[in-house]
Length: 343
Length: 193
Image (cartoon, rainbow over all chains, first blue to last red; front, side, top):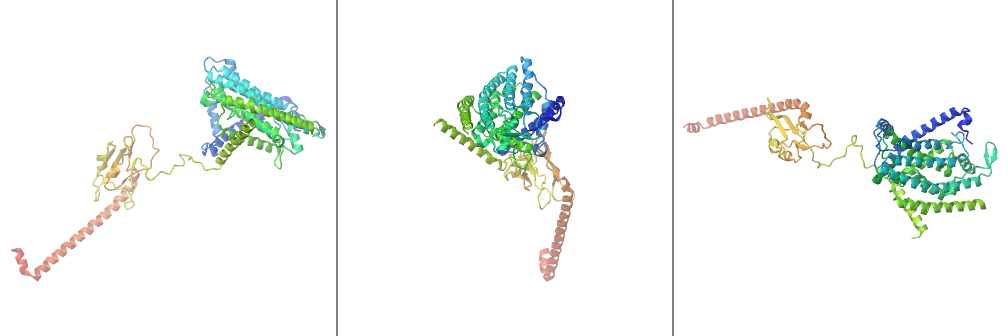
């Protein structure tokens, strides 16, 4: 099992400092890369070139954009709910850092390793919708409020298939990890421990994508909706709501929302990698390389989907969640539970 | 359609959509990195006028006839020029066009007697002022001296040849007259009478 930073550095303050620094660095670089990559993917799909001017093939474009955002004036609108308005970007962004620190990206070292990692990730994911609603409610703008309400409705609806589909993986981990070899001993694998989920897949030599294809598809769709990505980006539907919940945010406050969105995407892809694609498991290359390759493949798929499909209407979105995803994921969970009990 | 059937057919059409966008990844771009690459323009492209560098002269052939200035409906051409020392041909010394007024009608090109005007391929010209005057002779300035010297030589040669010919013709005439006088002195006398 991966050694955590607390095992390596006995002083918790040093461990926390190093952990936060590492996570923030990875998330920042990831966001800068993802924004550039998203623009490139959209350009390739639309037979354009995308950013080409700043740096090699426009790689420094997002750095320039970030500098621009940092230099912008922070406009505070009249009649806002001050505490909510100012807290919202932080409430959206902070859980992202916490969630990212839970990811076991390698078989040897991790930042943290808890026995309830999966629950924590979903909890921190749920935080984002609170922050979005705070922002929408606090900014005294009807578009922001509408966007925030949509976001909350959507997040609550899609959280159910998200968790149900990952529960079937948890059941499998419990069943397949009865003799889970860890640090020389053999234990019962914990289905909520992200490192155990990956470890079981690595030891049994099978990724849960092959055993649970339906759960993977449902999980991936739900992640798209949870991170407010197209085709589920109705909380920030430009044609209807200007910019949705972050209409009244400018400069780096908006930058934090943007940062959080791309980091959420990254975390969603990481969780999907851990649950279904075997995390660090893979031949030849070292563990972290496999982990990030798989993650970025999923991120690429998210972008590919975004630039392929049109946005859903709100009632279609709800029908899709409650009429298709929830029944299918319950069915999948029941069948998995039955099969786990039988075999 | 049944519940399951609609899910499956919907999923299939979604995969088709992804396939279509995936096929676009490898395709050639349709856009250009504009300021670095410029599009190839049609030969019929009509833009602001410019002077042609004629291959036989090595420079333009504006003789300052002022026909274009006269026909221009927008009054945007101003030409100065005239005789050059030692040269037969007249030369323009100033060919100013105010492109802010030009309507690209092309009458000047049609009327030019030496066919030294053409449509340029300039399409991304912009300025910060209302005045937008170019002297079309500017790009030819460095060529002008060389051309004039050459032309003077050519003109001198032509003139010399002409003088020679004239002299030869005169001589021939004189000789012929002399011969005629020798052959029939009477006829000469008749002429005189």
